[in-house]
Length: 331
Image (cartoon, rainbow, N blue to C red):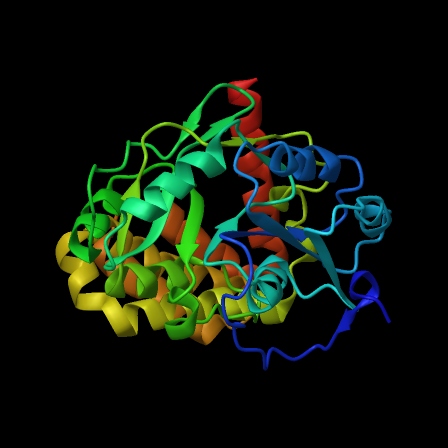
């Protein structure tokens, strides 16, 4: 069986392989992106800095995404496929554990690299001190807006500086490039949770440096954005999101409370909301009440608590209604 046809097991008992290959591994999780994946791959292959590989993992797409990627004959394009969809983070971790580069660039299948992005990452990597585990650049969206907001501080930023910035941030997306050694210390959880716990653990041990010039493009024309798939979120994934918030508070609660009080309150809300949506009223109510002790006049907290006791369907309806209303207001 060729590498392009490799079927990976459902488990995650992989360890990152030694850096015997190129300078960069560009990891790309893919799910139902047949119409847009060429744009992503072409943006990487067109880079002026050419010492890289692409490691793309298809999460059991229902469309022709995998077949489109197999059309690429460049030997630097390495494809893997999950037999069933286990989520974006699981696909990222499969890509990471099969990557051979010294530095690992995280790119989503509906994103693209801007011209010269890898050249700039290469300069940043050469200049980075051993304490820097992640370098990054801002994204530009196809509506002209930029992330992150506000701009990230200059220089090598540690955990305290990152938390202070995070507490006031309204957009936190970056084009990330990780030192390979990061993944020898920290693994991504693949139970469906989002990546904020991984990022907390990373920045608590390594420093981060950001080039303030954008390096990536984010497009909004993908046919299956996450906010349109809320109804498909499984109960186990909802519970994983709730556990994620719980575990962050257990590991970092005191320092988050001191340096990022808004994020501290938000984590309590997230734990309560996800548990309520998963149908676990007891845990959900306990965490939501902890949030309401801190924010007693929060209509969002009280409303979520009431709707949560009415059932997960009521919470989903309210979230979708809120998204539609925000969308209409900005149209």
